[in-house]
Image (cartoon, rainbow, N blue to C red; front, side, top):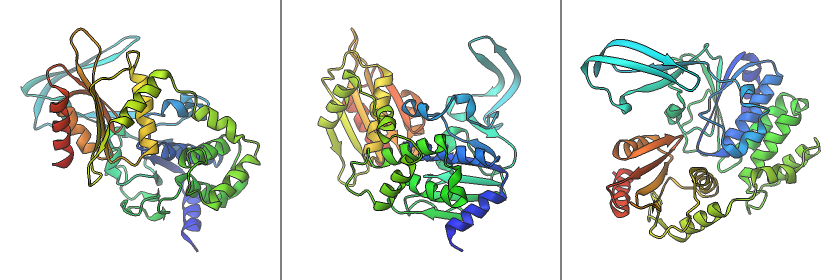
Length: 364
């Protein structure tokens, strides 16, 4: 019996199943959605552990309420750092605010941790996850939750930790292809509209809309199978690759024109001294970041520029596959962390100072 048969049997034997995709690659999230829909068809209790669905992938879900997430959220503070004497909260139509009063000690933002509690899982399926701690930023902590839980690990990098009871790994292959093989083995009649659309979207993202030179015959056969289900590759591709705005195009062009790569490929960066994107907004930057991450194999990437204002402010974003580096950057700069990215600004530091600081964080 091969590993795929083992995976099929493990899924069939499990009732409470959690799916944990990597937030770093869109294909991981897309293939997780396809598997999520499949497990729903099998009447499994299934939860998807994901920080958020990228904007351009939201057409793949009927509504955000359709996706099942763990519902119990835990906020934790180490007792040895501060003595909490009082807890109170205020709730209105806009916010829920929690107030903590301390008798002793001090609390910093970095001291606070967030996690989910949920019913015990029979099975955890990881997709493209290098190690379980990689997704701590999604509120998934793992140790108690995973005690005696079987893990089905799906990955396309052999250097990733083989932490699963079953490890389905295809070096440099498509995560979607692996997920498709599992679903088809369970029952190819399960592949209905939502599942077929998600699987096609995953193949399109992996192959850069079937333009990559290393597309295997197996991927083309899967695409042909899915299109026979009545789904249009062109329609899905149009939704994934909607026309970019002029600020996005200009920003991406300036990043690529000023891109530097360290000899060991450990760091990549661009410093834009004369950014010509006056109408650039955060959504444009996020879109460009996602495109860079999906089309290039960056381990660590940062881009810096000056804002257009009466008193110029240094701004930038930093992406790293190592979440610990993101936390170090957050401690050093004013910033907002989202998945494995931090968006930050500095009123006092110049671009060169920030560049040197980030390179030190990456290489130390």
